[in-house]
Amino acid sequence: MLCDFDGTIVEIDTAEHTLDRFAQGDWRTLDQKLDSGEMSLEECMRRQFMMVKVRRKVIVDELDRAVRARSGFQELVDHCESVRIPFTITSAGLDFYIRHFLRQQGLEERIELVAPRVRVTNDGVKFAFPKLVDHSSVSFKDDIVRSNMKKGKRVVYIGDGTTDFNAARIAHYPFAVRGSKLARLMSSHDISHEEFTDFRTVIDALRRMK
Image 1: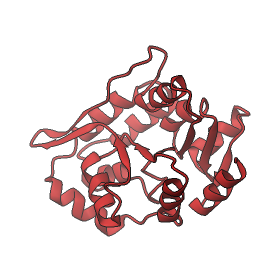
Image 2: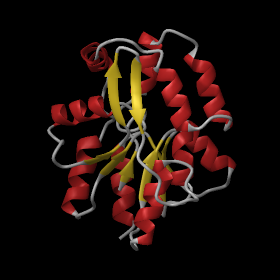
Image 3: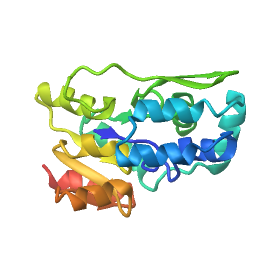
Image 4: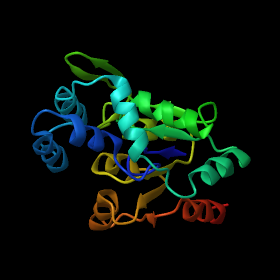
């Protein structure tokens, strides 16, 4: 089970919320270049978060006021554990906040996190992305899918954004948040997938896969 965080596990995009609240510059133009394929995820995040120059605690406190877990998240983690499906978060977002969120939920020891290493500095927020293993991968998200497939594993991928597309389109069981950019991309490319707003829908679909 590979699952995005921003806009998927939680209802808002924490990176976007942080940029909207604290970035000193036009970060949205870079987002448009990412969506159009003119810029890589790594370059986009690097340039956007150089505009954020506040302390880590300020970011965490702001996000705590705004973040809510999507309905059924705890139940999905419980279900995966009960049927021995490892649960991994694959996120290009703020690793320190994701770990903070998981501690709040009592889930830090039950979920693996694959994300960039993030440092908050006086010169901006800096990202060190995971190294790619497969030369055909576009980002670390689809790289993880390929890595699991090479081990003979069936891959469930859950996401909501443009940056999830390359991972979701090659996964065995792709899920997209209803109405999301990922859902529209999957539909426009005629790729079979399931859409959801509540993780209980994902649990029901997993049970049907047996």
